[in-house]
Each structure stands twice: as structure tokens, then as C-alpha cells.
Length: 127
Image (cartoon, rainbow, N blue to C red):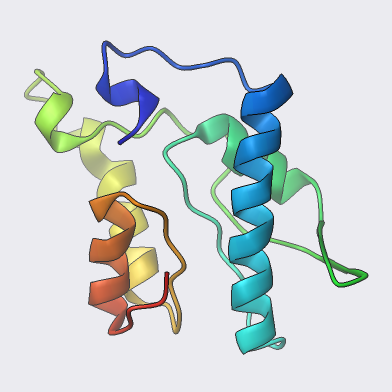
């Protein structure tokens, strides 16, 4: 569950929080890269700071610098169950992410159901 799901609080992207997220990110990128070194990796997260950081900086995978793709500088991803507006365009990034994940050949995801749903759309159960 995202930090945004609890009172719209977003932790500052630095220190131990950033280090923890980057460990998870590096693991996911390495997993996907080693499955297929020729296909691009698209990184999706409800942490826009993390996405911006990942696509601006290559990720080190066993000594190789891997460029990651993603959507830069977008609004925070609002989860359907935690939004009290009726503005459909608020959810465009959420559906855009599902469309991208659904077209992927492999989806690495964390504990949340959003990534698992995207993996299901892609027809795989990688985690």
C-alpha cells in the first residue's frame, strides 16, 4: 500500500527510505534484465520521485549500466479506493500504468495488488 493511501502523506525521497526503495528497484531491474537483456525495461511506481530518479540514472546490473524507461514528472498516482473526487482524468496515470504492464513480457512487482494485477494482465506471475 502506498504512503499516499494514508492521509496523502508522501515521505521525503532521501536517506534510509531512498536506500530501501533503491534496493527493491535494483532487485527488480536485475531480475527483468537477466530474463531478457535485449528488451527495454519500463519502470512504474506510485512514487513519482523514485520513477524520476530511476529513469534519470542508469541502474548497475552486474557491472553493466542499464537505462530504464518510464514516464517522467507526472502527478502522483491516485488509487481508486482512496480518492474522493469524481474527476476521471485523475485516474489516467493509473490506467496508463496498467496498459503498459499488461503489454509487458515480464512484470516484477512488490507486495501490492496493483503490480500483481498488472502481472496478471501480462500473463505472468513473476514477483
